[in-house]
Length: 216
Image 1 (spheres, one colour):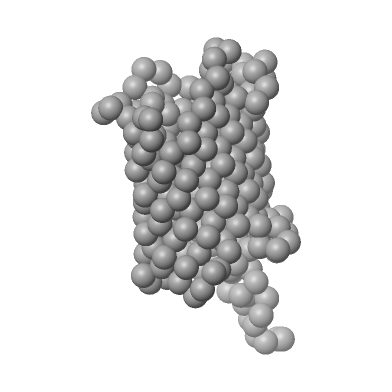
Image 2 (cartoon, rainbow, N blue to C red):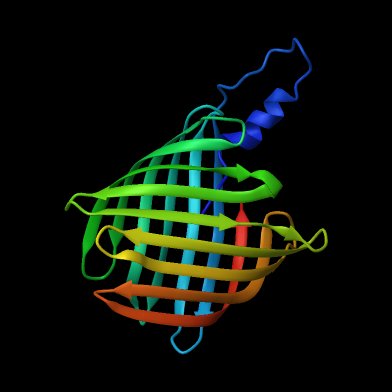
């Protein structure tokens, strides 16, 4: 899961004519539902991945949430509350807390990471975590929007998760084809591969996804 922060607004500000005063103290708000989808295969589930932020070009507070439900139970969910500040025109540093929840247990983490737009418009993020029980973890994501037409967009994405003592515990790779009815609403379909390792047991699944991408 990745959203650009101050970079877009910063670029717009820098485009102002020379000598014109620039106001970077205005407060903005944004909501993005990046993935809101049914995952269909040998096992069916519903997945969400969304974010909301409020703040100025220089200082923002983000709420990130992602998770999966199956058979009426939350099987995996992560929620992050982060303070975000730009460190360059295209990258932001993030710091805050993360809470993992499912139907049986909760765990909390401190979070520190970086996210932004790399060359060739590849969206990247990387975050390290330290839990309240002495565990450490890291997550990295990459995605790219390939415009096939003005409305048809193909998005490959990959996510890696590692934990102390467990190495690579999760790998997810997806390919989604979105049709933007408007710039703010786009249904999509695609395929998603997941590899998860828990307690030494590996599980793999490839599923068709049907979903909606929207923002405001």
